[in-house]
Image 1 (cartoon, helix red, strand yellow):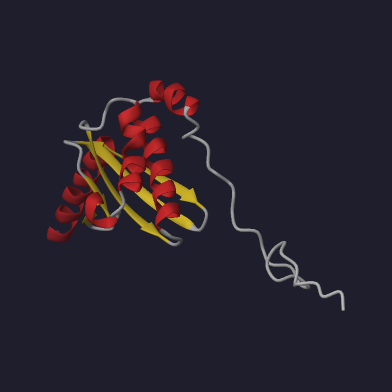
Image 2 (spheres, one colour):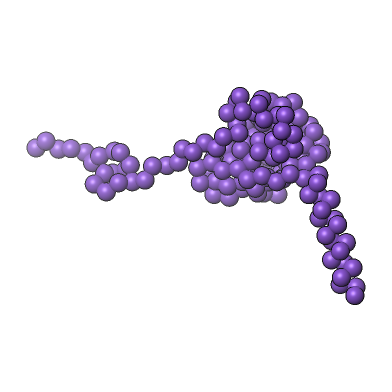
Length: 146
C-alpha cells in the first residue's frame, strides 16, 4: 500500500516538472546534445560543468549563448544539457540547435527571429567518406611522371 502512495507522489512531481521544463535534441556533425530549458536566472550547465569551465574559448561561449541573446532572454532561462560525440565546435553547434528548438517549444512567437539567423535548421554538413584509390575523400596520391 505504501509503495502505491509513493509512486503517485513521484508521478505528480514529474508532471509538474514537465510543464516548466522543455526538452529538445540538437545535432551537429557527430555531436548530439540533449537540452533541458526552464525558467531561471541564466545558468548554463554542460555535462555537469559550468559553460565557462567546459568551453574554454570565448568564441564557443558566445556561440552557445547566441540563441538566448538574440531573443533577449539570456537571464530568463536556465539551460542544462548533456552532449556526446565529436569535438568542441560540433558540440557547441549541437547545443545551439537544441537550445533553439527548446526556446521555440517554450514560445512559438520566437521562431521567426531565430529562423532569420538560420538557427532553427540543422546544419547537415558532415565529413565526407574516404574513397578507395585516394589518400583522403578527394585528395589523390602524389603523381610521379617518371
